[in-house]
Image (cartoon, rainbow, N blue to C red; front, side, top):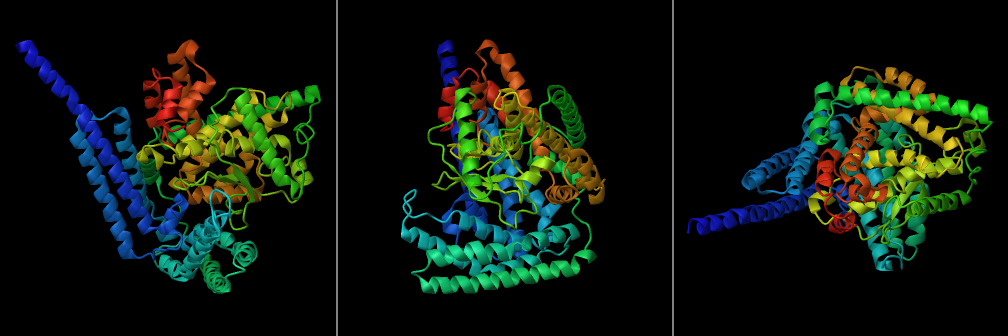
Length: 594
């Protein structure tokens, strides 16, 4: 009888964690749904960024009251999250416990932005830039009739939404500027340079598309022209204000050492502090320099040139350049499959090659990409390039930001497209767990893309040439230099001028490019370290995987597992991956809808 009763008790206690875990899982997903819905209501531009097209015709007018409501809501969600975690106790799985960490970091990041870093208080140009970028994103994602099921009615609706958002633009910008109670000089200087590109985008590309696609709707076109002109007038007023006052505004971009450490710990869930990051960055920087001198010796001994003569030939200029990029990405995809590097799913979408708009070039002089939007039906991504004014001149300089030959396009394509951001983020957006699906961890994204650059060199993509190895080594120096500059600027230990001197000397960038890079680092602290800390964590996890798997380890198996957990911090992903090694990679992929 005693044994029977003990067995019943054991069964009851054994069932409790499952029920608790299921309840916790449901409550966490409900909280994530509430979070997304409220965020989109507070900021419809975010809704558009996520691919929730019902937001496309809306703008929420900023105010102190709305800001206070947002802060109170975030604090309430944090309390609710702790209640869910407390009620579940030890009944949650590792994945559910990690989902609590992920949501907590989401809430902390937004609270710290509003209460600690307070960028909206400092960036007078921010509202105008936000509207410009929103309109550009809507322009990029305009439906194409008869593609992916789109109809003429869908296209007309998309233009109506774009026009409606433009019509609200002046009220949005002016109200947002009222929140900038402590405008900063560097925010103004960089913002002014970006706003200078607005007329080219609005008057040329956007207007041409509006005229062509609304030819049968003269009333809509008339509304567009009026809204465009009002928007441009407000942007011009904003730029004039920035230019007139920037010199008198303080340098308030530094957030301070304590805030920087808090960001690393709470927002990014990093296991490192700034001192450790600087140490690994200096090691990375030194290795890049060493690799370059070794390559120079090999080049001299073997009479192997650097540049287009070594790198598969010069890329074509003019309209043919877009097709050339497209072909190189196809070759990268084929190489991934041939060497069994990673599973390339049949459902993977495509990338459109687009020239970087003028207003983004001051902060994005090289290649970049926009992944398929999180909740959009479309699986299309966009690869932005800034074609060199002269391919020949870029080749003579071995320019770091201008891809003038096959090898450099392969290298940047590996980072931005295959197997880099496009593949990784396309997989992450399909994750069935909403908490995982809404994550976008910079260290995983940039660490994976950075890791892939050298991996393709080692796997033989480039043959016996030295050019790609030099390009990779120089970008390793750039990533190391960035990760040193970032904490120095954020803490206020270095001035912008000191950072530019250091970055120019260490990176090989021109003075102008170094200034632009440092400006971006100063205004967006905590991002550029992602390459360095992400790659190190990824390679450390790979070593742990190999030790545990032994003869069963393979590159494809590791990569497939890595990409199956969502775009989450490696400090969270790593323990889950190692705990799941008893499961086949195919089962792990299937659970992630990959």
